[in-house]
Image (cartoon, rainbow, N blue to C red):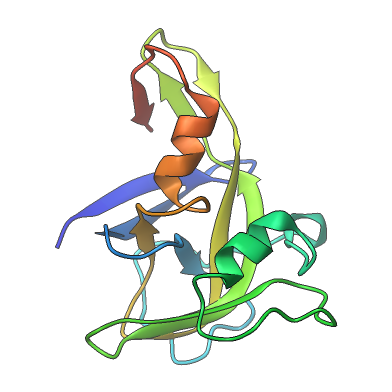
Length: 153
């Protein structure tokens, strides 16, 4: 298993995520409290009220198309639930925050990053997903459609 470290928030805090190429949502453990959560090497993430993605947001609808439950018109926040082949799982809400990136020319960028906030995680700490519109890679492509090499700090 490989992992990657990312810096999220302002001020930026480090999070260590397992890499997964077969799923569609990056998530980190949330300070909600987190139920059934594995202990990780990083602090629990605490979303701000304005950083919580609503159920009417287009990103929520994109995520919901890949989830096993239906779209919730009456829900205020965007819920997610993921189960893996090894029967580990994560359940929580979708949020946005700054992702600190350093570009090859030495400048920094802080694009908005969409990710899950795990409130009930079974046998996983945090995961970096590399597939679909709400994935980590789609965020990099969206903000850096140029010859710049992107490096995480």
